[in-house]
Amino acid sequence: MKENKQELVDFAVTARKYKTTLTEKFKHRPIWHKPYAGDVISHLPGTIVELEVKEGDEVQAGQLLLIHQAMKMLNRVVAPVSGVIEQVNVHAGEQIPKDHLMVRIAVK
Amino acid sequence: MTDLSKNILALREKKAVVEMGGGEAAIEKQIAMGKMTARDRILSLLDKNSFHEYDLFVKHDGRDFGMDKKDLPGDGVVTGTGTIFGAPVCIYAQDFTVAGGSLGLQHARKITKIMDHALKMKCPIIGINDSGGARIQEGVGALAGYGEIFYRNTIASGVIPQISLILGPCAGGAVYSPALTDFVFVVENISKMFITGPNVIKTVLGEDISMEDLGGARVHAEVTGNAHFYAKSEQECFDQVKRLVSFIPWNNEHRAKAFEPKEPSAMLNIEEVVPSDPKQPYDVRDVIKCIVDDSDFLEVQQLWAANIVVGFGRMGGETVGFVANQPMVLAGVLDCDSADKAARFIRFCDSFNIPIITLEDMPGYLPGVDQEHAGVIRHGAKVLYAYSEATVPKITVILRKAYGGGYIAMNSRHLGADFVFAWPSAEIAVMGPEGAANIIFRKEIMAAEDQEAMRQEKVKEYTEKFANPYVAASRGFIDSVIEPKETRSLLLHALKFSISKEEYRPAKKHGLPPF
Image (cartoon, rainbow over all chains, first blue to last red; front, side, top):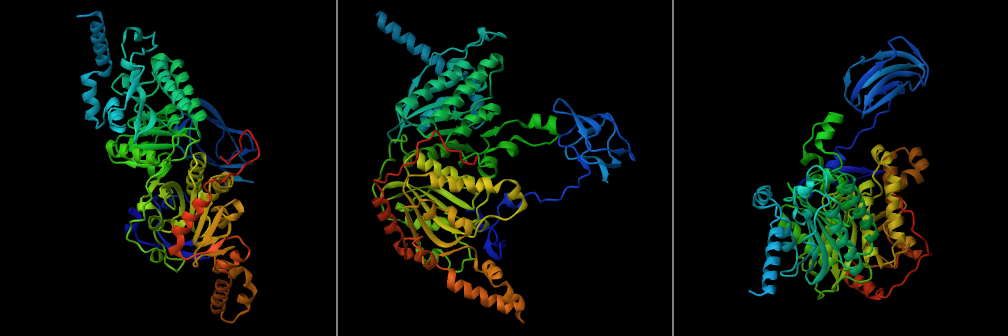
C-alpha cells in the first residue's frame, strides 16, 4: 500500500492528535478566506463589454457596474453593496481571467 | 453445390465482413493505441466459447451528410450474451474502429435491446465503453439513444448488477451511463472520462489541462471517486471484473454463489494487528485478512477516500460486504468522500442480499471549513440513511474508538444492527477522553494551580471510567465484549443465525436519501 511508505504525521481531530497519513486531496484542500463584501470578482473568464463606473463614483447596492460577456451571455454585474468605487481594475474591451478582482467598493 | 450450402457460405461471408469492424487499418490503429478490439475484449472477458453475438446485421439510421452511402459494420457496437465462471451475463462493447465508436440511434437500440434482455433474464449487464460520443450526423437521434440507455440503467438499478468498463474515451453525455451503473472499471492511459474536454475548458476558462490530468484513469480512481477499480492493463481489468462477478449474485432475488469455506491464510495474529494506544495507526485490512475465508478480500475504490475501506470477502463460503474505518489514513475519520463511498457500498450490498460487516475504529468527523461548506452534514447523513434502510444482516465489531456521531453512524444498535460486538479495547463514548475532560472538568482545571497536571488527572479519570466498552454494554447497546481471537467464529455464528432474517419497511414509492 502506497500510504505505508509515507511518514506518519500528527493529525488533530478535536482534542486529540492521532498518528496517521494524509491523502493528496486533503493536502490540497482549499483554505478559506473571509471575502470582503465590496470586492467584485469574476466567476468566469470573459470580456468586459461595457464599463459604467470610475474610481471615486458613489454607487448604490444593485447599481450596474459593468457588463461582462462570458459563456455566450451578457452578464450584468451589479454593486453587491453601497459605497464608493475604490478600484477599477478593468477597461472596456479587456479580456479577463476567472477570479479577477474587477472592482473594489469601499463599503459605507 | 446445394442451395443450402450456398446460403451457408453467403452467411459466413456476411458475418466475416461485419466481424472485421472498421477494417484492417482501423484495427491496426486501435492496437497501436494499446487497445484491444471490441470483439477481442468480449472474448477475453467471457468464458471460452460462451459468447453469442446479437444484431450483427443492424444498419445505421443516418440519412444526411452523405451517411446514407456509408456502411458502418454492426453500427459500431458488438452486443450479445455469454458466461463468466458459468454465470450468465449480457454484454456490449463499443467498436472504436467503426466511425470512432460513435453512437447513433441504431447503435443505442442494440445496447438497449441487450439491456432489456438482461433485465428480463435477470442477469448482470456489462458495458464496454470506447466511443468518440454522439454521432453528430444523426443529430437528435443520437441524443434519444443516450436517453434510452440512461433510462434503462436507472430502471435496472438494484435489480441486476451493472458493470461499466471505460476502455477508451467516454465524454460528454456518454459518461452518465457508467455513472448510473454499480461498478466502473478504468485502465491506466486508456480510460478518459469527462463532461467537457480540455479544449472547451481551455477556450471558456483559459485553464490548460491534459486529458489524463482532467479525466484519466488515476484521477477517477483517486480524486473523483467515479471509478471503483483501477488497472494497469486491459487484461488486469478483465481479471478484476471476473473476480467481482464471482462475489456478487446474478440479480436481487438471488444470493451470491457460495464457495467451499476456507480458514484465513494470512500469517497475522489478530491480537497484534491493532495497537492498544488509540492514537497509533494500523492497516484495518489486516484485521479483515484475519477474518475472511482464505484472507481473500476484494477492495472496492481502493484509492479514493482511503480513510474508509469497503469491499467483498467470504465467510464460511458466503459473500459478505465489509465497511471498515481505516486509522492508517486521516485517522479513519468520516468526511464527505468516505461517507459517500460507504453509503453507496452499503446500498449495493442491501440491494443484492449481501450481509454487511462493519469494523469500527474512528475518532469522529473531519473538522474543517472546506468539509462544512462541501456539505458534510448531507454527505454524512447518507451513511445513517444507508445503514438504517438496509435489511440484510448487519453486524458491527467495535475494535477501538467509537466516539460521538461516528459511533451512531457506523451501524450502531440504534440504527438497527443485528449484532454488535466490541473488543475489550473498544471505547464507546460521547467523545475522546481529552475533549470530554476539558468540558466536564473545565472549572476544576481552571481553578487548579497546575492546570496541565489537573487536566492529565481528569483525562485519566475519564478514560478509566468511560473509555471502555462496559458502559455501553451495561445499557445493552452492545451484545457482547469479545476477545479478538473469537471475532471470526462469532461472525460466522451471527451470519448463520441471520440466514433467514426478514425485516420489513412501510410501503412507499421510494425514500429520499440525502443525495
